[in-house]
Length: 78
Image (cartoon, rainbow, N blue to C red; front, side, top):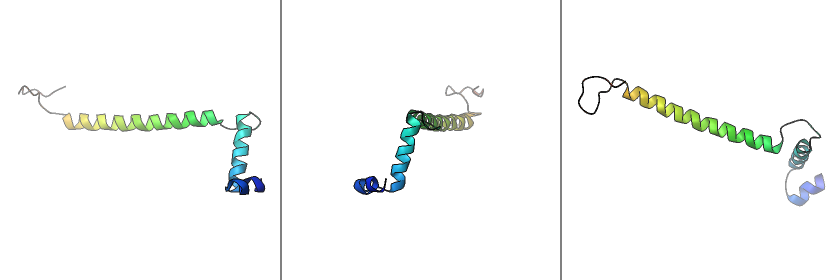
């Protein structure tokens, strides 16, 4: 492992991490596969986007609460 790390100019720990991930991907060791990790990262990213979008909608609803219609109607919008 040391020789490979030196040849690649990376830490020995990185080689061990890559090796372990390869074993997980092959089903030899338990853990999340590379594909599962990518899917999880994409899902977390989408959740953050949706939460930000929801916060914007909530803020807009709060700002518009109690406003009147643009036609000059005295009744508040629903």
